[in-house]
Image 1 (cartoon, rainbow, N blue to C red):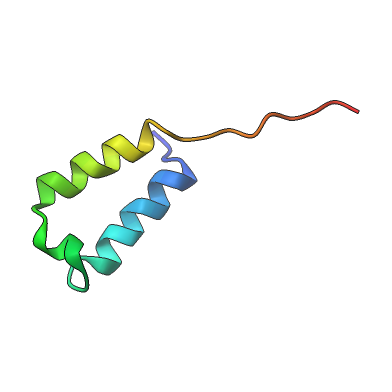
Image 2: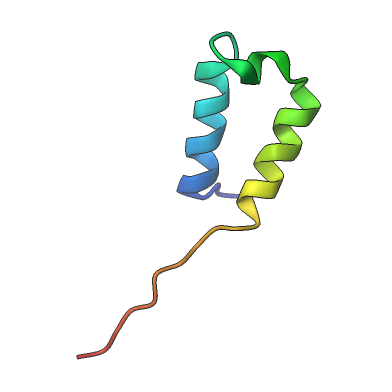
Length: 50
Protein backbone atom coordinates (compact mmCIF):
# COMPACT_ATOMS: atom_id res chain seq x y z
CA UNK A 1 0.00 0.00 0.00
CA UNK A 2 1.36 3.41 -0.99
CA UNK A 3 1.67 5.98 1.79
CA UNK A 4 0.37 9.48 1.30
CA UNK A 5 2.87 12.32 1.13
CA UNK A 6 1.42 13.72 4.37
CA UNK A 7 1.99 10.45 6.17
CA UNK A 8 5.51 10.20 4.75
CA UNK A 9 6.20 13.75 5.95
CA UNK A 10 5.09 13.09 9.52
CA UNK A 11 6.94 9.77 9.70
CA UNK A 12 10.11 11.51 8.54
CA UNK A 13 9.46 14.37 10.98
CA UNK A 14 9.06 12.04 13.95
CA UNK A 15 12.21 10.15 12.98
CA UNK A 16 14.21 13.37 12.58
CA UNK A 17 13.02 14.87 15.85
CA UNK A 18 12.95 11.76 18.02
CA UNK A 19 16.04 12.90 19.93
CA UNK A 20 15.64 16.65 19.64
CA UNK A 21 12.45 17.96 21.18
CA UNK A 22 9.61 17.40 23.57
CA UNK A 23 8.46 14.63 21.23
CA UNK A 24 11.47 12.69 22.50
CA UNK A 25 9.83 12.51 25.90
CA UNK A 26 6.72 10.92 24.41
CA UNK A 27 6.61 7.17 24.05
CA UNK A 28 6.71 5.63 20.61
CA UNK A 29 3.11 4.51 21.04
CA UNK A 30 2.03 8.07 21.87
CA UNK A 31 3.85 9.47 18.83
CA UNK A 32 2.20 6.87 16.60
CA UNK A 33 -1.18 7.72 18.13
CA UNK A 34 -0.48 11.39 17.40
CA UNK A 35 0.38 10.51 13.80
CA UNK A 36 -2.87 8.54 13.50
CA UNK A 37 -4.82 11.54 14.81
CA UNK A 38 -3.09 13.88 12.37
CA UNK A 39 -3.75 11.58 9.43
CA UNK A 40 -7.51 11.65 9.94
CA UNK A 41 -7.42 15.40 9.25
CA UNK A 42 -5.74 15.16 5.84
CA UNK A 43 -7.13 17.98 3.73
CA UNK A 44 -7.77 17.87 0.03
CA UNK A 45 -8.03 21.01 -2.05
CA UNK A 46 -11.08 21.02 -4.29
CA UNK A 47 -10.41 21.66 -7.94
CA UNK A 48 -12.46 24.53 -9.27
CA UNK A 49 -13.66 24.33 -12.83
CA UNK A 50 -13.20 27.43 -15.02
